[in-house]
Amino acid sequence: MPHLNQSVFKISLIGAAGGIGQSLSLLLKSQLPKPEIYDKVELCLFDINKDVLNGVMVDLSHIDTLYITLKLSQDIHDCLHNSDIIIMLAGLPRRPGMTRDDLFHINGTIINDLALNIMKNNPSGSSLKNISIVSNPVNSLVPLMVETFKLYKREDLISKVYGVTILDQLRCNHFTGNMNQNIVIGGHSGDTIVPVIQDNELSDDEKLEIINKIRFGGDEVVKAKKGHGSATLSMAYAGFKIFKQFYSLFTSIETNEIGITLYHEIDSCAITGNVKPAILQNVRFFSIPMVIGKNGIPISFNFEIFKYLMNNEFYAKKLLPTCIEKIIENIETGIEKSKEFYREQ
Image (cartoon, one colour):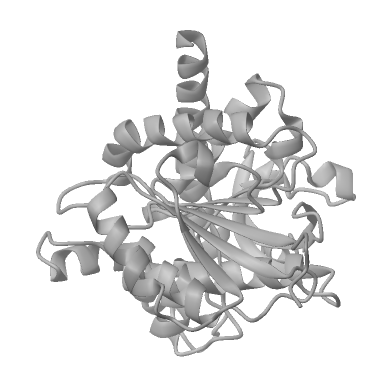
């Protein structure tokens, strides 16, 4: 007999009709296990392209994971209302010759609007546990959203905002042929991506060749698709790996924390007792291994890798200084844009 008041875990997918959105919707609908502490899952889809979205909805509805219901939202408010996880995929995709900075002028406006709508539809004390930004440029869009929440005094949302950078890790695994030893830290564009390759048999030049393949893997995909798309399939798979972990954290009985690498505000590490390395003292946001608790907020950041990096001239003098200089610029771009939007309200 069905429950009279069924508990529902709601995942909101913004930009579900796009290249990443369609593939990620498929993975979420078909691969998420049955929740342990909820009766069912609602996968709520939204996109401004209503015709394509309707087709995606009908197509996905034939997948027989009956505990996951689909909902097509006609407006953003309905999609965001009482969400547990919000996944942001909307915005302009990369095209040949475009940089992530070019994308910011358009996608920054979209992220600001999304932040305002999240606040309207998820008051303090709501069920919202995670806001994940996949849209580029992650380095600037995450600070933009966090700063917007700060300006509107929604401190309850600040620590729940993450930038999804895991595709860089997947590329690192692929190009090094190693899925365990190496990690990727920093940001999610060009020189801010710092793959930490701990293979003593490789020369610095050989490492740099691999690092550049990882850093510019997205450009390779854009060129290969000849302007007809970007890294949509690999990004959807990468995103699913992250969201499956969050889903397990929030819907299973035994999972109380997860270890994961994401782009997040790291100034809050002082609360956890972590000590930021000196080289990161002026860096507010960084992609770093962290432990996230049941409430969706980081418990700790793992800066142990910096002991290795600061004793390695290749990283300490070549890669990290450039990464940090550029990521600070990206962060400031996002923060200043948020303040500009706030003044215009």
